[in-house]
Image 1: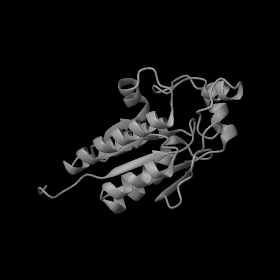
Image 2: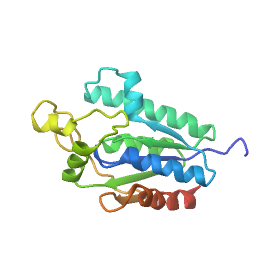
Image 3: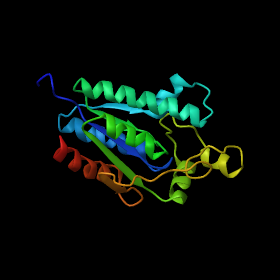
Image 4: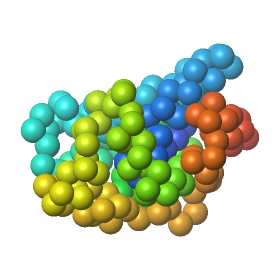
Length: 184
């Protein structure tokens, strides 16, 4: 590897409950099988450190996503491939990453809100995501849930759109991997 080689960054975005964490882990497994190393950056894990008692305010979201971008940019500049598992409900968060990271791939997990809500009710593993967010939103106990109380801005030109209510996590990972393999 030359000193000018950068890593790539894949940002998996979608509504809460769309399957970002489980698809990210399936993609990591697939990449590992192909001997491709990648560092996972999870907004939920980062948020536990930055904002242990999160309010999900706009100001707090700005800090969390700016920090995710900062880490992703540093890692890719040092030749490390990065996978971001984060809702990034505003397009500007993902657009900032695209403008600052030379090899950036945006993946949109397209999943209807009703499916996301049902998945949250049924899920056993939260991957550090807050639990019962849709239930709290429907009971007017939370106004900050993307897709319900806050907007979720669908990507305009993602490199990949995954119909994540049809595909298994492994099939979604395969679809994403095909794009990574052509870009790297």
